[in-house]
Length: 154
Image 1 (cartoon, rainbow, N blue to C red):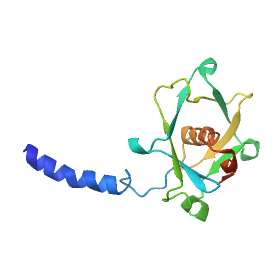
Image 2 (image 1 turned 180 degrees about the horizontal axis):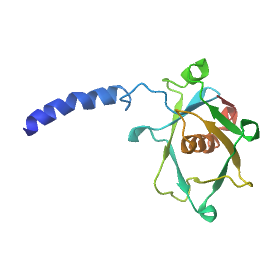
Image 3 (image 1 turned 30 degrees about the vertical axis):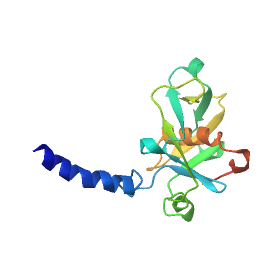
Image 4 (image 1 turned 60 degrees about the vertical axis):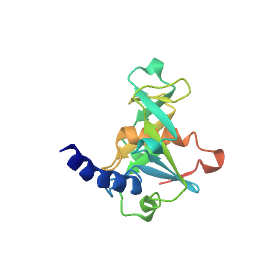
């Protein structure tokens, strides 16, 4: 029984590795930054840096305000998945990954989401592909990009 299970699991594991850790072709949260893309990591070997979230404003290192109108935001995500810019994040060697860690280390950003003012960033999200957490992780992760790549093309 164990050998049959192992024999059936190995091809799936190999297919997952060949596909880069992806088992679906859905659009993943991603933004283009100059010549590279910043994307939410979906497999452990893709993680280049982490962010985490907190419900304690005092424990945060970055504050992100959720706003109700796109014109108030520094970073806006509105579904339009069929654009060429959304497709520009797929594949290639220029992808950098952000993952959301359950706990932060001292050098990793800790994000506090709220609707209160006085934030470092303001975001507006109306999307099927991006969650508010994805958008916040990507905008904070873009801050870690080299200065020459900080202009985001969405």
